[in-house]
Length: 138
Image 1: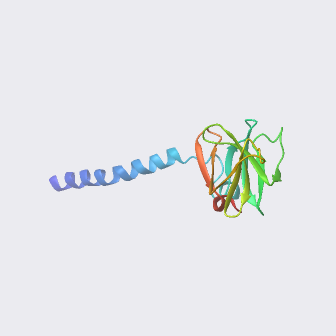
Image 2: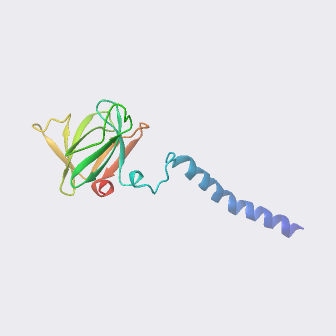
Image 3: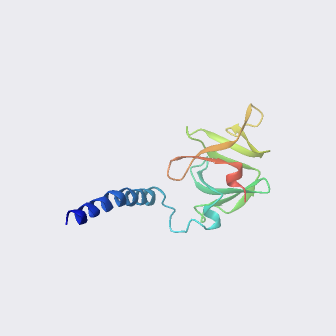
């Protein structure tokens, strides 16, 4: 009888962290109604634009293809630049530049620009996100 009880206690001790980890993963990785393997869920960024609207973007042929969340007000389009809000709520405009991005503060391309390997942006939920060129290319 003691061996059975010890076996059950050992099983609970081993399985409890696994179940807790699974529940934590499910709670923190919600992908919405669409499965994660859909093309628009991978290699894209859900960002907040300068006007406060939510957009999804990815890169194809060195252009940003953009899809609005509010399709009644906006339409899909492609552009060589992307206007987004960064981690500090500053407005930036990005262009593809070689293996990274060229950024202009507030879209002012005449002033100082900077080359970065990743875009630091605010997502639809207000969380800070980071995407590299490789992560956004399709």
